[in-house]
Amino acid sequence: MEYFSTDDIPARDRMALFHDVVARHIAGRAFTAVSRAEIRVEIAAFGLPDQVTVATGSYSPIYGARTRELLNDGRDNYLLTIHTREHEVSVDGRKPMTVPAGNLMLINEAICSNFQLPETAVKVVSLKRSRLARLVPRIEVEAFHHIPVVAPGMPLLTGYADILRENPPQGEQARQIAANHLHDLAALVLDGFVNGGAARNEVGIRAVRLDLIKKEVLRHLQDPDFGIDAAARRQGITPRYIQRLFEAEGVTFSEFLRASRLDMAFRLLRQSTSGESTISALAYDCGFRDISTFNRGFQRRYGATPSDVRADTMRRRYD
Image 1 (spheres, rainbow, N blue to C red):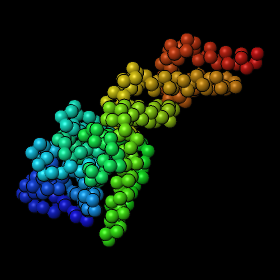
Image 2 (image 1 turned 45 degrees about the vertical axis):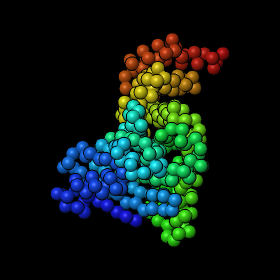
Image 3 (image 1 turned 135 degrees about the vertical axis):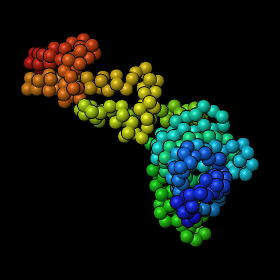
């Protein structure tokens, strides 16, 4: 295991070593620190047969680029990265895309790319391009692929890589087996997504992420403090990203949350066996803070007041 930390370097030499050692020779990228006073980098890595590298890193906020000049170093492996913080990436001159925390980005190192990182930690696996392409032929249709954390097989790939980081294999046979497993597990994850191409990947990622957010909302309907900020924290993404996902469906996050709470109240009213619970208590149990807001929203949605629905339920039950 090789280890590099700016903490081990005198402050006056950090910037030069950061650019020469970390940027050019380790990462193969040009880095610009957001703040010279706060530059901090830690990297731990080890190599395996077939050009495989397994690494972890942590960075203070930085901008990075795989420039056209740096492409002359001949690197053409696929770099798989998973960050602990949401960040932006632009590949092959395309519009920057937001990558939520925990999602996997796979980028061909033979292609130019740019990224902006907040203070973050990252897990990295570099795999041989030609070997991965044999396992997943359509991988080369696009320069990059964005895979959600919930993709089938992701726990296997990330879990196995974590085991290797904690216990690097010893001996050539063990090292070769580990390299084989990483290629096979990466192919398992990538095959289902890559076959549809990058555009389909993004549609699938947004759909999965939106479904996860909606399930999160439904689990917290009774919590009056639950809102878009809480949902974003739990999902490891920004509130604005959540807003864009809902806007694509023609609805806002607040509208979905309110409608879900109203639907919950309607179901409870239909299931009630008597008038043991007041309308106010029911509204509060469904996450509403204000009874008048609840009543107005309920009548707009169902064309009847909560009392009307309760009375109709009682009537139907005893008819």
